[in-house]
Image 1 (tube, rainbow, N blue to C red):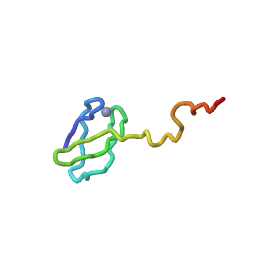
Image 2 (image 1 turned 30 degrees about the vertical axis):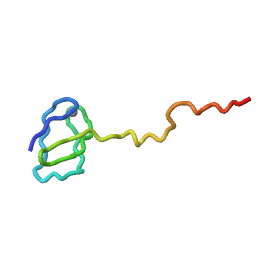
Image 3 (image 1 turned 90 degrees about the vertical axis):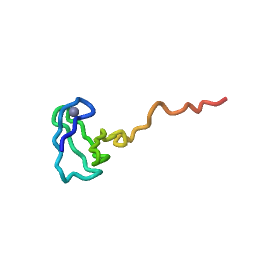
Image 4 (image 1 turned 135 degrees about the vertical axis):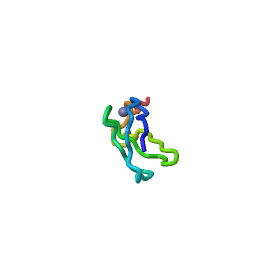
Length: 65
Ligand SMILES: [Zn+2]
């Protein structure tokens, strides 16, 4: 099976026995792609945002009168 990278349109050959939930890496842009569907074959970029455990933005200032 073949599919194109949603990020860079690089053609990616995928194993015929690929299963939903598997992760494939694009050889062109290095993006990790998760198989979200096998029929039709559909890939989606893996969301790595969960890796970052930092607080987003400054903590609310509790400077009350
Ligand atoms: Zn790519």
